Amino acid sequence: MTETDTEIRMMLVDSARRWTERACTPELRSMTSEHATGCPPERWGELAELGWLGIAMPEADGGMGAGLPEQCLLAEQLGRALLTEPFVSNAVLGNSLMDAVAHGALRASWLPELASGERRVAWSAWEPDGAALLMHPSAKAKREGEFWRVSGAKGLMPGAGGADALLVTAQLAHDTTRTGLFLVETTATDMTLKNERLYDGRHAASVLMNNVKASLLQEASTEDLLQLLSQVLDRGLVAHCAETLGTAQAAFDITLDYVRTRRQFGRALGQNQIVQHRLVDLYVELQETRALCLEAAQAPQSRRVAALALRTGHVARHTWEEAIQLHGAIGMTDEYALGAYVRRLALAADLYGTSTDHSDRLANISLGAMA
Image (cartoon, rainbow, N blue to C red; front, side):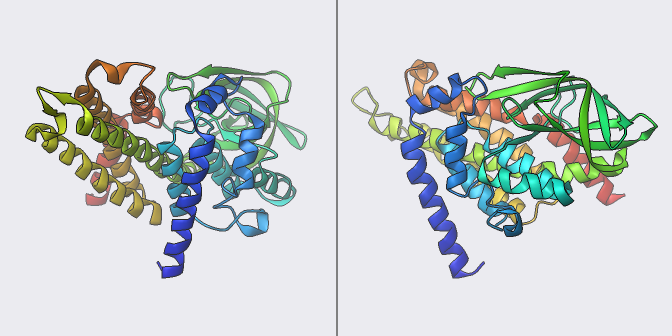
């Protein structure tokens, strides 16, 4: 990375910090959370005006032509500020998948408007069983002229509520060994979106489709399509980890400030050696995970991403556990700033797969490499 690249990234981080200080106050986060879908259009438009929605999209499609490292720098700052809007699920996952598979007139129609914030797309990646894993789809698709009809359900996905279109997978009725990736506009009839507010204030939605009109974006054998989707999901996972690290760093900073000022028995809590050791251990974990995140963002290979996701889940849990233990009961109250960070970290640890999921994946990749 050149000196110019470093300066540009520093400017990006600085602009994100300045914007979040103004736009991510507790009052504004609460307003967003209380919105019907958790993403007011005017707020999404602000992110677009800053160029952040299309930062990694090609310049020919209205983007800025940057990459995953820049998206992760943004995601970390947005996670530090507890942004409620679905940046990772829509601007990273949804837009990345559209960039990977959309062609021709559909690409020309959708990608510039995704970058400008005029439209928003979500990838409903999970099956209805609640697991955050890529699996063979249970939905079915049948051809009807130049369009398709899709029937089936998809599980809760952040950012799906209020999106203009969903990306869904479905088995092809004429050949169940093949799977298609479809674009389904949410204005379609016979589609039901069930929006829910999660316990950290963000929103997610499940979808039920009954013979819904859809456009086919990609068709392949189920295994080949899942491989392509896994590569896109890995990009989203890295951005999610960066966002989670930003939240964990903020919780750490709040805790460090607390133990420096809270006094017991005539001295600050932070003067106790055991407290110092615990915070130093947590600080080292955060820095190690950030380094792993930077490496994965530069080259999101499956083994690196699985290791990062596993490590980030551990750090998220360790951070909120230590923060609550060192704060005592005040750390669990809604009135105190830490409470919002604890809820975000508790959800983030499993939002895109549990530690068991990532551990199993890492083991399978490692064993496959040894075979």
